[in-house]
Image (cartoon, rainbow, N blue to C red; front, side, top):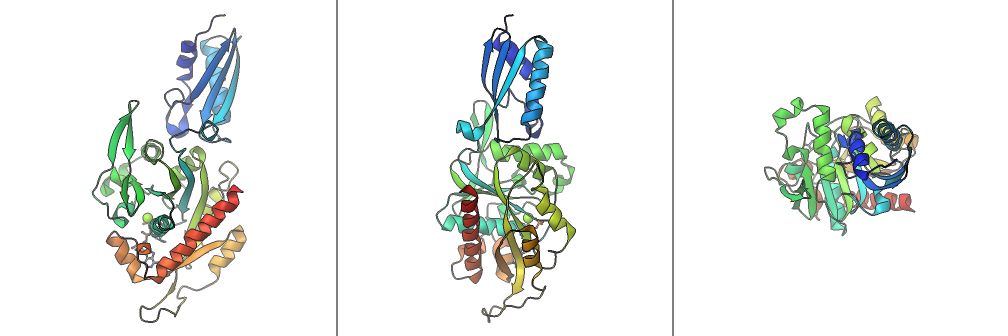
Length: 350
Ligand SMILES: Nc1ncnc2c1ncn2[C@@H]1O[C@H](COP(=O)(O)OP(=O)(O)OP(=O)(O)O)[C@@H](O)[C@H]1O
Ligand SMILES: [Mg+2]
């Protein structure tokens, strides 16, 4: 039998990588095709080594090739990971860290923004991606609201150039969606925009890409976990909300069999109140101890605690994260969190 590569490519165009909503040929996932008589060997590049899509894509590729070419051919699929190939749009990103929470309003964006700033201050190369379509607040927190990221074309594809402020590279779903339109976006559209921000953007070399995730357990969470190599997640809670079921749900979601992303730890936000004129005093107005209980239940560390401080609201609103201010005690608290995150990531990599 004489089989051409063109025949194989054409058939493989019918194989869809659902997480990225496109076929594996156009997604440039075909690394190599080797044809010997009626034996076809195909190397397919997957984002992750243990990618959950490997099984389904391999079997549908085999099925389609047999249908399109001949039942008598022998097909071998060899999965290769982007990391093995030293490639992939995010191959320059060492650690993807996702900030998660059970409910909205616990300070996820505040923690994400200040962690990014704090890591930058300790000499790391950092990007932040705001994946919260319903409440994108990262542009405001970094004072780049109203600006648009640049776009260049590479190999016929539009590639986005992140904005930058305080040394942090920034992209946000908020750059594409008007707040009053967000509700009309369907899950598939949000996923597509999210993938564009992740994979079709010029992040370059980064030590950390911090992702401000939407609250809860939805589509984007699944896409992130199944498509990208996430180093770990950080769970943000507040003392009064820590005991609720959705916090556990959010924490457990990433740990389920297919996702298995390590939880690096918990950041307790709005831990205590410190009056401006008595910086040594701590009032635990929402109670104390629940976060430690959750941490021991999940067997993860508490990475740090951030007090309730009016300045956090002010600096968030005016686009200069509080962690930039070296005179603030909160900056010290964020530095501790950043150090603990680095420690946890280091432990994972050993
Ligand atoms: N430690 C804190 N002290 C005082 N105010 C805070 C603190 N943390 C967050 N805030 C304020 O609480 C509000 C909500 O915080 P933030 O936007 O970070 O939460 P979020 O979890 O990202 O919310 P959303 O679910 O809406 O995205 C903001 O106005 C922020 O400035
Ligand atoms: Mg937010």
